[in-house]
Image (cartoon, rainbow, N blue to C red):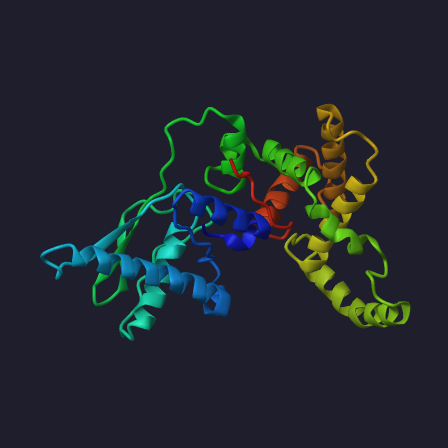
Length: 303
């Protein structure tokens, strides 16, 4: 299960337990972040997975009369779940573990679905030699369930155009409104942010010049920390002050409308003629979600 850094941590454990109960082996990894691969937690998870693959290959070879052949493992999955990133990480760790020299190969990695168009081979183990085949993503020919389609689009498995960025952003805000994730941003709504008054004033004065400089340089860069915090603060305050019934679809839609209107100001999206402000807000909001800046979510519950 790749991209574990974006998922709800408690639900990762529930899914691992679910797979174990159904006699399926599972590993939670994050193969995308190069820094995470170097860190102890990420490295241990990927190294454990690689050790399992190598042990399984050796076990299979013991049952064969000819054990000198090279083993090839096929990597299969839906688009944009990180198959290429996983192949690259296993290739790197496998080469380092075997103390092999030479230039590392790299499968192309992209945040857009459908980037991998050919099958490529990367070596991930020696003695025995093991190669992994990175493959293009696969999906059913038709996806008739609108909810499934939206979930796939949210994770980037299918293009935004198939579901529409506006609808996706509304779907995302609905998930956020019905979760407890926004409650983690409560401190952002407090001017003191939980800091004693004296310390808060000193911190504000010390960071004021730096913040103003950043805002002048990147006034519309929605990935800057001060804008991300403003987005979280705005969403928390909008949800917390809402007095409607979230079990009522019309009331929930009214809250989503209020959030989009409030976010338009945070993202500094003007109401220009010929420019759809909602489209711009949707694009920025989806980007923050997909990069983990709006919290950790697991879209599917245990069956």
